[in-house]
Image (cartoon, rainbow, N blue to C red; front, side, top):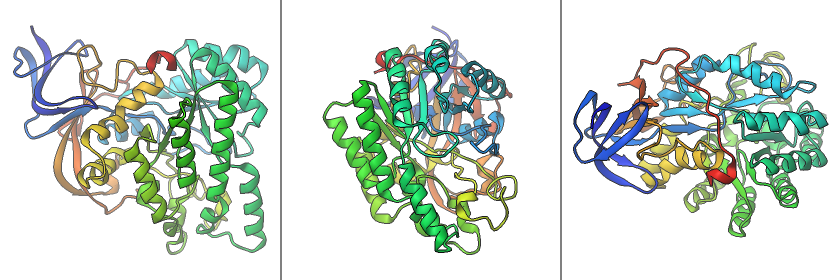
Length: 464
């Protein structure tokens, strides 16, 4: 047997396998895993390294306009390069429907933008205008094209759907085996708090956390789960940031409800105190739901360990710290007018490896699941997320012992800051393959622009 590439001598780790062996790759797929393989054009020495499934980032905003029309900083080239340096071999950003826009137009727009990606990609389709045409033709068409996940917002004026519209989307998605994702915050609570704080003159970045209380998330998660159960449809709750929200997810999972969820590194790495940094520095940490406190972080870690969360995703939302991004409404804008989101696609996995695996909070097998395998299972990437014959050769080779300090330059994105600046990290991806082709080799970009391909994903029912 001959191979295009052999990865030799590494410690292979998946959710179910941990062994030292070689991986043989042929025609972009894993062809064999054995003790000693020979006969390859290219041999990658992975001695002393850990060989993991390539990361699958399933929550990122790339070349996406906000509801207010603000384009974020990363296009599909810079965003995919940053993802690859962070150990990812594929990603599923969002394709956002603006009100009045057809689904076909959305997918065509993002198809043109994504053609620059160096890693494989798909999209979650954000639905803000669920007209009869969208429900009866648009969403089924997207599903037929392999876009098998849709997202709704329960807040934000220009994109939110009401409960009736949410039920319609859930029903349509469920009938096709698609999963509906939800940004769950109680819109009325948030509006009321914003008005209250504004009347009191509390508009600095530090008040952003107070404006979106934990109760707003917890109530909305409970309501979203209730709607999904009524519709008999699966639900994925994004960026869970509260103990109460995690408790609802854990309880429903235990009861057999088809509910999935994620949390994000920034809720584990930062707190609301970071919003109170000098001057307007706190604006760098404005995201929604907002950062919480250290007690919440401990509970979120407990839920990661317990399996409440299927993924730990970046929610990469890159707005530069200038007038094109965070301060598009002015350098002294009140917090509700500051662009909402934090960058992190390149730090998701290094941070989770360092603070999770190295710190002893999670096992390496759990890391493989949180970084890739569960995302592949839930979102229908049926040839990705595992290391086994027949799977795409999407592989990340890690140096588990390298100690390094985070800098902006390490991120390889279009941002002018990283919230992780200066953090000491242990463990780093050094080589990343996508379908057997090197994207990063010894921490050097070697993939041409446009190497990535669109992934037509499978229905949830087939993926689970």
